[in-house]
Amino acid sequence: NAGVTQTPKFQVLKTGQSMTLQCAQDMNHEYMSWYRQDPGMGLRLIHYSVGAGITDQGEVPNGYNVSRSTTEDFPLRLLSAAPSQTSVYFCASRYAGDHEQYFGPGTRLTVT
Amino acid sequence: KQEVTQIPAALSVPEGENLVLNCSFTDSAIYNLQWFRQDPGKGLTSLLLIQSSQREQTSGRLNASLDKSSGRSTLYIAASQPGDSATYLCAVFHLFKAAGNKLTFGGGTRVLVKP
Image 1 (cartoon, rainbow over the protein chains, first blue to last red):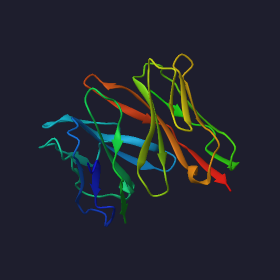
Image 2: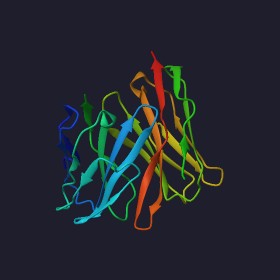
Image 3: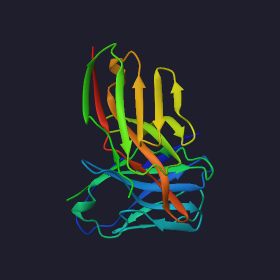
Image 4: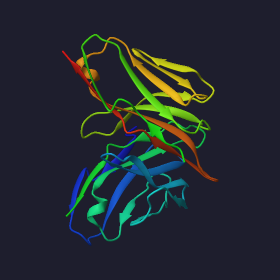
């Protein structure tokens, strides 16, 4: 199994640009989540999904959109990038009945 | 609101010494607690998961304890090696909304093991 994969690894955007961070898992996990990691703030939950077609907001959802059309994929969309969205983004997944979370390698995003 | 604290923020020890990493949380209504390792510029690797009903969990040189009533967990790493140098994060898994739950992370302890 590849586990949780994320693309791209690095990305630089200009303010106002849009982009999609990709996340995929091949473990047939029902739950998927997006976190951002910032110095001094730890990891914070952005959005999560409990299954295909079902998503909900986390702690810091503003400026981000998600959708879950398949079990495997959970893309994160930045509609109009802002410097405050400069961060490292992690995708995670787990089984519904198992709370151990598996994390992807992260995407380092810089917005100038 | 659940808050997770890790003290100290950084730790430096000579090779061979045992490491003791602390994690405290404010709300004892958790499902479990998970310890992660993060190397610079890398993702999170799960080390140990302790269910709320357990007192400790062991894997090789790693041992994690959990005291829910006092809101504390401790990660012990025996006979530290330079390869143990990394940031260690603890996270508690708890109810977030009626239909969801989430991990709340501590700020991490950055460990340096000197040869």
